[in-house]
Each structure stands twice: as C-alpha cells, then as structure tokens.
Image (cartoon, rainbow, N blue to C red; front, side, top):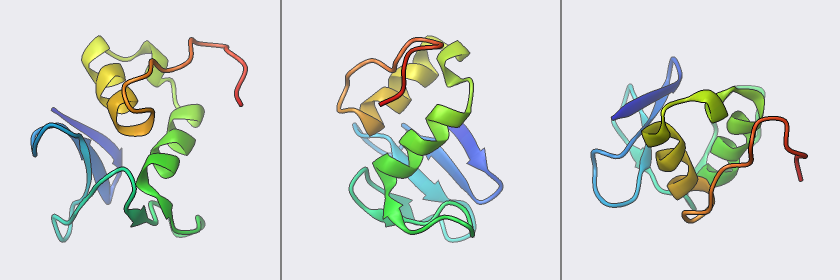
Length: 89
C-alpha cells in the first residue's frame, strides 16, 4: 500500500517488513531514523519525527486500519496512534 504524504513523498509497506518513506522523483527510500526534509519550510528531521509531525496535522486516525497500522509501525515501533482528540505530547 502507498500513502501519499505530499506531491514529493509517499509512505509504503511494499519494500520490506518496515514501512519506508519514498521520494517520488528519485525513488530513494528512507527508514524511520534516516534524515529527510518533507517540506521546504521544515528542517531536516528523522523520518519518524517528520511523519509524526504530519500525523498530528492530518485526520489519519480516521483512516483504514491498515493505514493506521503502517503509520504506527513507522513512527512508534508498533505502538498504536493516539485516539482522535487525544492530548498531544
């Protein structure tokens, strides 16, 4: 499955056991601890932190169970995502 993050990057679980963020133009895959700059206005961050930042802004808690599980495996080592409206840490 591929989850489009923005016009330049997507998250996929099709490249192995751990999901990867992939840069569309180069097909370079980033693991959770690799540094990535998802948006021009953002600093370079570990990929798991960048995806966590995106997940706080988007309604992925309402996405399919498969999408939520893929995001959780990438950013939280398998821990569940917080419920809708939960306090953000």
